[in-house]
Length: 451
Image 1 (cartoon, helix red, strand yellow):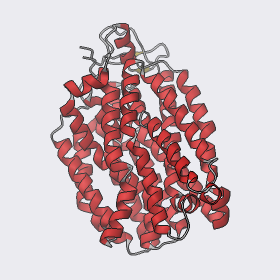
Image 2: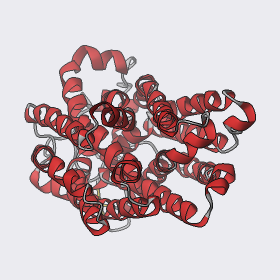
Image 3: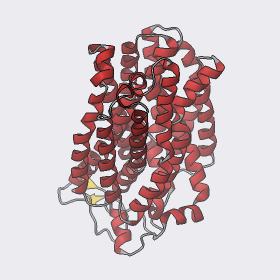
């Protein structure tokens, strides 16, 4: 069984992780680590920049792609497309996980970003409902499905990549780069949405303004793919390949030998899935439609909340290295259970400074979970099925509860008439995560396994 070796001086005179093997033949330099961090960052950035653009411009997209006359129904349909694209993510999780565990992490990541960027770029070229009728939402749905498939390999692959390259005592910090890049993509999406809605008229936004963010993703994706193709695969995967110990059917092995761990992982993802999409994607729509504040102010509050999220996320990853993954994840669940409903009540005041403070606090609380989760999930599974285990658990939970969160929140608001419906949905998700993490083992001090 392979374990993580201690660090040793590299040819550069720095301290960096060796290969997670007893041979010590593969040495990772600081330059290697910088390249790995950069490649992992840009892929997730592109992916979530697209998701942010779609979520933050949902009201405009609803007007462009669906029949006029009923804005609420059009908005529901827009979020339904957002949710449907997630239904393909478990399939993508199986495919990309299998590729990542059989062929290599690098190969899966290089192809996933290329497909994602291409589909995003094509969305910008779709004519609206007024031009091609129902073909407009149909083509949008097709491209969203392609995006969902490609995105399903990104978060899990980048997290596994970083954890397998990182020094043993800094896996939490390095893995936190993934949610940091996610939030940075959301931040840029929020900034561009706020800029466009502030500078352009409604007619200009519906005519061409909404297309600009999607056009940007194409060249960014090509850059990301180029960087990834220049990297070596992770030391532990190269070790497996050299020993001819790569799992021939990783998904089958995952369900045969690690189904209990898979269930724990799915439960642990739930707070991230629901919290991320409600607090960092759906919130501007909620503030504009339910609280009644100006859309530009709603975007601004969410943007500043994202800044706090990015500011805290690496710190919580570092804290998980020191205090343990379980402790951080349990703390996150408990705080959401206790504080979510009172904080949503404060949103209803409609006072911008209070809304801003709530957004910043909720963003900070979410990092307790999100800064810890990538390393926790990667460490739960042995190397042979790590990519598959992470991708399947993460994408199943996100398909069922993450991508559907804006739709469910909007539907619950309609059915209940209560502005607190999204808050109670968040509390329920936090409770499930609390139970799952409570029965899990601590992973931060355990060696990465290749058995």
